[in-house]
Structure formats: C-alpha cells, structure tokens
Image 1 (spheres, rainbow, N blue to C red):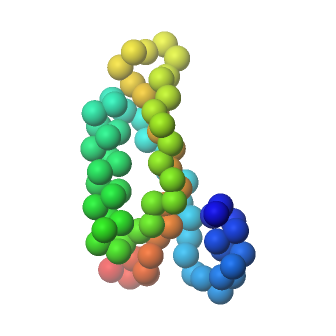
Image 2 (tube, helix red, strand yellow):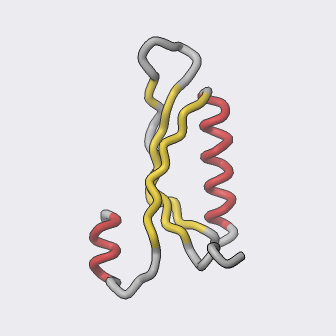
Amino acid sequence: MSVTAKRAENPASNSEIVKVRVQSTPEEISSFQLFLNKCEELGMIEVVNFSQMFSNKGTNKYYRAYSDVVMKGDFENE
C-alpha cells in the first residue's frame, strides 16, 4: 500500500512523511539504513521504503539512496 493510500485511510493522522536522500559511500549508506531500522525498532519512526543504491556520475566512490520515513511522536519539544 502506498504512503498516500495509508494517509487516505487515516486522514486524522498527524504523521509527517520525510523524504530523505543519502549520498555517501556504500558502506556508510548501509550503516545509515541500519540506523534507521534501529530507530524503527525503538518506535521513533516508520521506514516506508529504502531504495537501492544508485551510482553518481563522475565518481566511483559516492552513491545515493532515497527513503521515505514517517516521524512518530512530537520531537519538536524534546
């Protein structure tokens, strides 16, 4: 089910979808994905998706990946 469909089911939801673009080495991107997964296990976020890695033009070192994350709770006042 798409994120839009999920929000349509529950329009009263206060959740915000954050679109994340990560650009780094493949090892660092994998570490960031593990970090997001740990945050999800702790109930802080919901990782809706995490894309495959795409190579950047002009470099063999840096790649990029995209993710949609739903923030859970009110972190602005913490």
